[in-house]
Length: 262
Image (cartoon, rainbow, N blue to C red; front, side, top):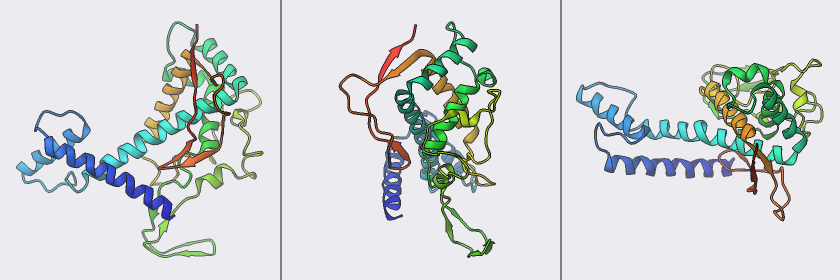
């Protein structure tokens, strides 16, 4: 837990410094990015004497949410996807075949193709399960004294969900360390999403951005696989499917050769 806190503090300091830099050079009504737009809104509300949650105190928090939840976890999942496609070329071939059959070679995949790409979607779900880029989810605070089974959780307790344990529970997922997209398909090859797959957590405090994250993952994954074959470069180090934990659970650095598909 101390290592997690240390890394969280590092990210927090990084974001606070970026916000400070933006405040120093900010020009009202001439935004360069999200932070400048937020700063514009703060100044506008101050001119109108509006007491708002859009303020300098909350700006680093909002930036942090976008950085960690909106980009880092998605990019980490995509890195795992590339790695697993290299490690399991037969699965990559099946994704290629399905994309070519449904989408063809004359256009890129669209969200409307999703229902016709069950194996591709199952592969992406299996990446999310086995990689579990947010293995301990997001810590939450208990709002009131709560009893869960034989346990009493006092109000104010920090609750950390172990999503990794759920995604690797052999009672839920036979051979959980095996990369097997078929576990998300029924006997007819129809996609079967499972309630036990919870990469965005569950309940009222689940990830607010899960819907856009799902769309991003599908679009990036299918576009990359439609256009490229991922191969391990000759003489590069052996592939490792053992991850490391930074802000999220990431694959170890690896080399990949992007081979354009005809």
